[in-house]
Length: 531
Ligand SMILES: *[C@@H]1O[C@H](CO)[C@@H](O)[C@H](O)[C@H]1NC(C)=O
Ligand SMILES: *[C@@H]1O[C@H](CO)[C@@H](O)[C@H](O)[C@H]1NC(C)=O
Ligand SMILES: *[C@@H]1O[C@H](CO)[C@@H](O)[C@H](O)[C@H]1NC(C)=O
Ligand SMILES: *[C@@H]1O[C@H](CO)[C@@H](O)[C@H](O)[C@H]1NC(C)=O
Ligand SMILES: *[C@@H]1O[C@H](CO)[C@@H](O)[C@H](O)[C@H]1NC(C)=O
Ligand SMILES: *[C@@H]1O[C@H](CO)[C@@H](O)[C@H](O)[C@H]1NC(C)=O
Image (cartoon, rainbow, N blue to C red; front, side, top):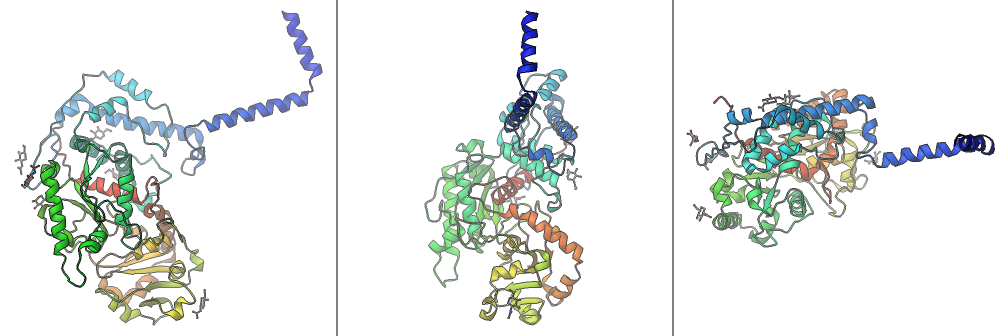
């Protein structure tokens, strides 16, 4: 036996060229490394992304945070905590309905050790930002035993407790958000939990027919992506947290408005009858008086066409482009300010995205548009075609547009003025974001899009209507350093305002859905265990 071995060694030593052997070994090593990389459950870039410097500490950090999270969840499901917490879920605190729900303990006692073992077992894969974080199976089981409202109360408690700051997500840029930890935690719960029921009632063109072009396209894009969605849509209304009224305000107008009649009543009556039909046919509307129902309407008339139905206008969650807090229809924090997007080619919603570098933006401020509404006449009176830094026009004159188009102006300006039109909203805000120009919003009482989560001070300037005469002064007073930060923030913000034919995480579809989810959560009340 040993003689055989010695002979093999001798053959290896003398017959095989040592250099060749080295080459073969090197090829084998590299090959096996490549195979291992391709089978990693997360992209390699995560390991070398800037927020985490050292590979080893990164792994530890993630693990620790994850453990922490599981612990806090475990605390929440613990028998002691649950018994104390008589979770009162009340959707409308003022009176009409006041459901009290006691979350009762549905599982047997689990020893501390077993709980920990469960927790430890479930953290094997390092957490990746690209997959939804898995919960321990116990928690999953517990959650699935709850009613939709109880589950919401559970998620809400956990979100309010979200003080994790080390759990960086390279996909989220913290300065854009009011509180990125809360947003992230809330978004994760939405991904895990949210179910939307879409009423199948109603016929095209008003219902179920998304209209994807023009300045009212966001209601259409939302409808299309919601109806196509698999993750969030449920066919079982008993499982739903939200109910969607799938109509288009733009199509409602096209179908029912009598031109020049100045009468929106037929449109409001149509919606009233639709809601009453749903309320009679299904138990869901009456159960909450519409407060777990939502609509998405971008046309300017969206809010006014709800007027014939008391509960629709008061209780339903409304995502509206016309987010005017002074009219008592749009209610901040309950309703959602819907971004108004101009889509010229639905096949290529991202066409023309981007703008010039700051050093190549010679124009201080730009606006071109028709002279309507209460703000634009004043703006044009003070600034119309008067100052070389302030390129402010009515409709863009031919002599100007011949040389430089409207989008080119936005791409070459530092600030893009977004004065309200007939209503407070303006498609120019999102246009400015697309062209990387800092928006200057002039519309008193306008609630900026998605402002329940976004921090608009970080990337826009809001000027009061009365300050229009001082507009140039105000813009020149902003230090260059601050401008550069805002402009850089705009670029990071862009992805949250993009429509994608196939939605991706944190894009506009998901941001709107998250705001609706967040509004629904806001109205779940959790009294302290002591009360
Ligand atoms: C928040 O989390 C801590 C532990 O992480 C827990 O003790 C506390 O009860 C939680 N608070 C709420 C309101 O859930
Ligand atoms: C609850 O409903 C009542 C009557 O429908 C309404 O007056 C009140 O504003 C609602 N409250 C909330 C918080 O939505
Ligand atoms: C809501 O329900 C609780 C407990 O059932 C009760 O004490 C309270 O008075 C009710 N509130 C209203 C406004 O009906
Ligand atoms: C974000 O919210 C959490 C939970 O409410 C809080 O603990 C944390 O301090 C907040 N962070 C910031 C930056 O305000
Ligand atoms: C809901 O309430 C309305 C008005 O009170 C009533 O006409 C309708 O029949 C109710 N719907 C159901 C399903 O009971
Ligand atoms: C035309 O545009 C260019 C930049 O594209 C600019 O340098 C030039 O001054 C403009 N001419 C007029 C007449 O505005």
